[in-house]
Image (cartoon, each protein chain N blue to C red):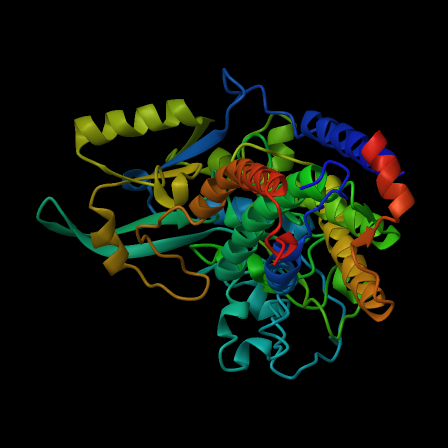
Length: 329
Length: 172
């Protein structure tokens, strides 16, 4: 009985998984990779003039996805659980950091380029990691990665526990209380809203359009394409024009590649960092342990079988010998 | 030993005295680190208890959960081999054991799918991921409930076969 149930379960699970993989968001014709790989964006900091056209475009096309929370918020228990509310008019207008209503912002830094002090700007948003900890560690599957390299959070499923923000090396997702599935469950005791972040306009990409921030940029700061091609272009520019690369290896590799005229440790020291304002620190692969331990899980049963066989053989040998307490006195 | 002397069957001494406590400790840790995947320990002050600060650190609980799974996989393989090779003729599996095996198998299968999902190039649908995650949690909670029930009813894993059953087993 147990075997049948297990078989049926496996069968259903595999079928569901297969169908799921096949039904991922299709890639846009304009940016479809030659192989079925991931799409990456190249952000050339040297071109950015800080006009915020990308920010406005992002806000406009994603406005329908923004939270409209129900108020008053449910009383939270215990009292240490704080609401995160960005829904008031003045807070919705915040543009100098990431918020649930601002998934992309322009970060500024004063640096010395070729002996001349310059103020440079660059768009900041989700890095869309190749192995995103937010998606891997989300307890409910609300955060997930698509086959085309986009990481997104499903606002219909997310409970706002903020785990994705805690495990994100750049603290990208931002919470809004008073909205989402948790209101229908135990709003006072579990969950606290929904987490929001850049979804790289997955719906526009599905329709063959470019992400709004890329389309509306007058300086063509961003380009999008197959990751291998984006990386090759980034390395060519870095080699020929002396630029620096960020995002290729950070957190095991991301689908957002920055090109800077100054080293990123210099840039990192020159930016304002804090809540909603990500850094440019070096980041090790946060999920490397999971990949390595998954391999160990494959080996572990063989170690157990070897130990078991050894025990059986030893016991069989002892069984052939007369037991000590059977000796005649 | 005389040819017609009763066959000496090995007893699961090591399994009972050494592996059982290890298994129970591992199950407890898997439950703790599994619940730790939800953001509840910090919210509900568990992580504030001296010595339990690690329960609120997601990467630590995730690492420990994987480590526990590795050890349990080895343990399960060992127990299956030793039961099949040593104790099958002298001991039958109890009904409680079948329930435990079903629930453990379900936990292992859903856990494998979750591990696969966490690999860089594996993508599951959100519905399947949620179904799998909730199943993993529900099967673990059922195992806990049945574990408590079986400890009250003193239902172990193995039942010594009767002499008749043993003789029949020896003939087959």
